[in-house]
Length: 257
Ligand SMILES: C[S@@+](CC[C@H](N)C(=O)[O-])C[C@H]1O[C@@H](n2cnc3c(N)ncnc32)[C@H](O)[C@@H]1O
Image (cartoon, rainbow, N blue to C red; front, side, top):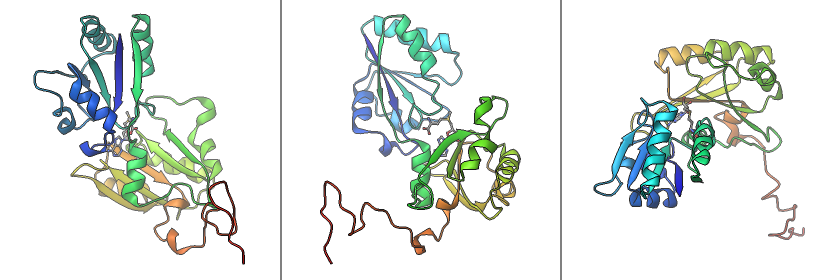
């Protein structure tokens, strides 16, 4: 007995994996987070498949539905937005499914962080500038662990991707400034990356809060911050070792002068 958890990708139904799509097409039951997953993707389910929206359900209610249907011999897929490994709340589902003797196979998806970087035309790890990306969220009603406060994470001055934080920009700015970020540090906010009503807002740490207000963005936004997001980064002299002609690796011998 097995359930597949599938990453739907950020919105564009073409951004699901081939494997994820095949599983959706073959499923008898498709359960999905209707607030975030594109119904165009869910409509690829076969005729007669049972489609269940889960946004209004609590955990036990949802997992009971999965268990009953799998036990009745049905192919059940659970479709999550982006990639389920990031803020997907899947572990609590997996725990109950395992308890019921049901295996879970996870099919990865394109997370909104990578879709947003793509939309912004950005590389998040620029050689000699930053080689680290922190995926996190600002602390709001839901706390973050003591050792993961934004002002402490921001001390690394690397690229920071903030999920679930669109209404917390005043606080974000304060924490970044407390970690000695410059007001001019570039920020890209992507609202609903890859959806038809996507919006890309280029701003800076100093102007972030105002930019969110002016653009009316209060949810479904990815905030990418750091010098890697500098819109003129391509004019600068950052080069990777990977394509450096002097640098050899197992797939390429160095070019002799
Ligand atoms: C519950 S989390 C789920 C994240 C998801 N697992 C992922 O990998 O993208 C929801 C948050 O992800 C971000 N998000 C999800 N889809 C997005 C999109 N299409 N564009 C921008 N941000 C998105 C927003 O920050 C939103 O508040």
